[in-house]
Length: 278
Image (cartoon, rainbow, N blue to C red; front, side):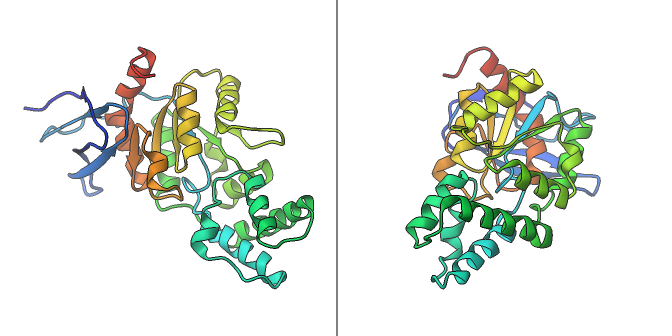
């Protein structure tokens, strides 16, 4: 006998759910939950009814480390900056710590590492290098394009929320062929502070009060929680595990997202609407 989803207290629960295996059958996936009470769906041998998404709505995606495999373009750009100045380049791991951070944080690090140029000049140098590298080397994570298409076809509105500037963000979307899938975007602008404020601005611009925020860094989880949104942590990105502890759901690959949306997050969103969480 199958059981309907139910709320249980949890810090790091896992459960098994069925999902299509691409061969006309169903496979079992083990999925992870975050720090809020988890919704556990045990579907047993029941076949999923037609349609995979029970609660279509606004999905807000981070870009770097969530959709876009930023290291494909960012690491070459930073290594080139150091080489041109005859400064020993940092490790790949050290560079990737700055993915998803505002540009100001990266500039602070470069200056502390021995760069003597003015910040405005460094900013232009980085921007030019990134635009070229995105077009030459940039790649999405596996399954991103087809999953986004499927989510859009299921009735979701897709939006982008990124600490990257408009020129960079649009270059990534166009180079990777997914720009037409997004109905709204909020890029970082001069004077922007917290990502939560940017999300509030985005929600207001599209006339929504609730959304699901998907991202790989603490900025994304904090932004979602500050605006009463459900959150999905992308553990395959560049954030440390502790950064995603407060996410409602964690995915280890982008293709897992439709399962989360269909089986668990509608219940989380309903609980948020009813004021169950602080």
